[in-house]
Amino acid sequence: MRLFKKKPKGPVISRAQALNRIPSKNLQLREERLDSGEVVIHYPVTIRPFFAGLVKRFGGSDAQIQTRKLELDGLGTSVWAMIDGNCSVRQLISIFATTHQLEAREAEVAVTQFLRELGRRGLIGMR
Image (cartoon, rainbow, N blue to C red; front, side):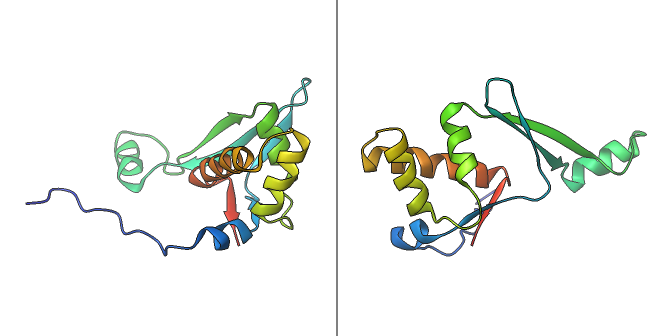
């Protein structure tokens, strides 16, 4: 007997298709540049309906939107700056490898993991 259902997985795409995707920034976020040159991203996070109902029941407002911050380091800031809605993931990896003098595979792992985390948080979308 299963107590929890597994989440349905989205369509599986090939590595080549994933590298040809173009990341674009979420329009609902706000960027703040620190004196050090690094970027802090402020983004909205909505509370799940169940929890919002509990908050409302105990006297909270019904518009429960929290704001979270993500502070990027120097490497993250450089990738973030390259996301312009025109460059593919493959192009970002190539530029990142050249700029930071990395091997192609090392740059691919770093950039794709970073983009995956940004996507998980809803900060970017892929087209």
